[in-house]
Length: 187
Image (tube, rainbow, N blue to C red; front, side):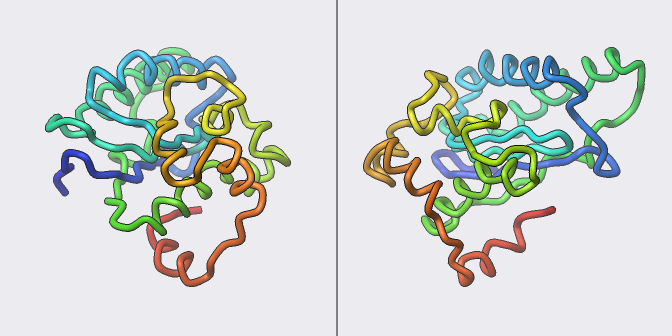
């Protein structure tokens, strides 16, 4: 699949054999630092992200003709090399290349934002979205001043960051939407 300028994509992957990809808090910070220092150079607009112990989710928009895959390759080849060195291991860290799905409607976009930020709660890692530090949820609701968030999109879709927070707290899954987009998500 070719990445198309100005379109949104759900990017995700997990550890090989569903194994961990983050072994300590420093690993999360290392990847977040690489993301923060490179995403603008590669024409990537980050809407939502969540780093989990054995997988990750990104909702991103490609802003230029440079494909998102160029950024992903740089990001994760470097990350894998660093983890292999730290963990005294070799070989692949992930289940192949990152998967990507074109976001082709607003219902999916909204559901995906919820799904990504809900991931640590659904996995039982935290009881509230705001307790997981390795997503941009706190940035999306204005409680952390991060740069990897599209505040304009949140205002356009929800009215304000406060309204997005209310949405996250009260969202009830529309079973019809879940059936349509559920095939794109993995456990």
